[in-house]
Length: 430
Image 1 (cartoon, rainbow, N blue to C red):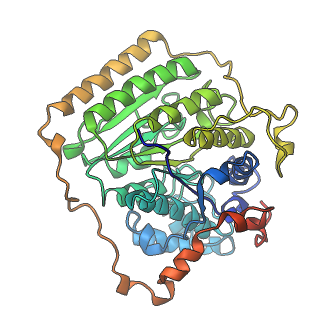
Image 2 (image 1 turned 135 degrees about the vertical axis):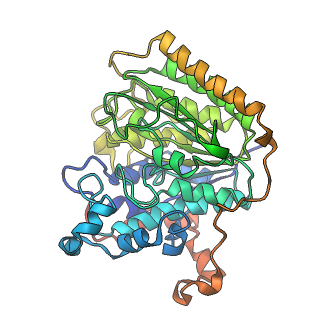
């Protein structure tokens, strides 16, 4: 056992100030609420806090097509009517609206996940947290499901520079389709997604039969669930499958997407998980003592999202948080009882024992197939699909950063936290 995990936490107040629009369920403001709960419980004193760098277009293009990145960079709400064809081509519109500072928003949340992966790679921490990340639906050439840039894929590509095998685990209520698709043909990333499947639920993929192809066959695992799953059945299934996955696949690092829309009472979700049940998954994954990158994801009842990610920050720090929420800038959102924990929900649990048993059996069967596959020792050298680091000299010299500038990104505890001065240069209201 390691004596004490060293934890790096990434946050930029600007990420919470963008606004998807009045009727849109995605509220980045939930990230400010999460951060202020973390501060009010004094968790920032137990970890290193960093402001992430804004990912360069060339970094985003390590996975996304250059023309798509360029379009996100160029588009803004005032010029929408000039680009009807591109908007359709890149799936921008109702679900993925174009709003003020969209590209900067993408640069910040993607930069956080890339920085988190780099700190893990350089053994500067054991666990890295970026609650702003986890936007798992974005595809190589298009936006999808409120996600524009797939920070998870970028973070995993970064981890693959140092690790032969990376395990991706997703507990969002929606299938982690963008991440699965990116690594569908390789054995160097195993993706495991627990999600609601059926009744035309978005994105419509993620049945148990989707297992990967070619070199990636059996390296995609899907656990399709029905409405109303509760803590007990979710945790039992999660622990059984994840223990077997880690034992069989022997990953060098783990990426855990903690979408909070799998909580009871979510505006878009349909599960019955309590915060304790959701956080139990985080606690379990932490026990493997592998380099761990933790991100946010979905979550549309924002006060519950903030509660959940604050509790999970505590879990990662081995710190039990008192149930009474301390006074903080967003206290009014937690009225009337100002308590941290939320109970499970009351949606009928449609996941019968026999249904869950069948799913478990199919997943275990697929895992047995890789134990006997010749590829299990897998090469240490990144294969061709991996795009190498961009050349320093090719970069725009104005964008190159010397060490001193990079160091300025690192926030000292004492300058970052008294009051809300990380937000004082925001002009937009969210």
